[in-house]
Length: 64
Image (spheres, rainbow, N blue to C red):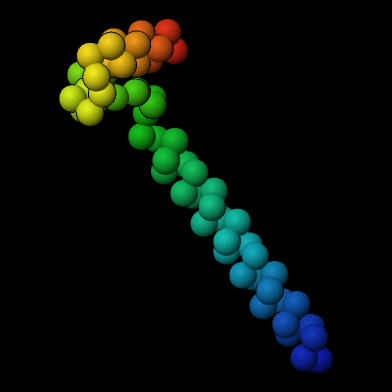
């Protein structure tokens, strides 16, 4: 066999292994369940001023 054919076969095998590994990883991540956002009470609001924190909470709640 030529060297170029061996390189092509090895490259194809590596490509298939990466594709299968990616599919397995996606399936494992998908089995974790629904993505639930963190509760707003977990946010460190002391970093903001009181009016900024109130405005921030109003904006965050409008997304959910």
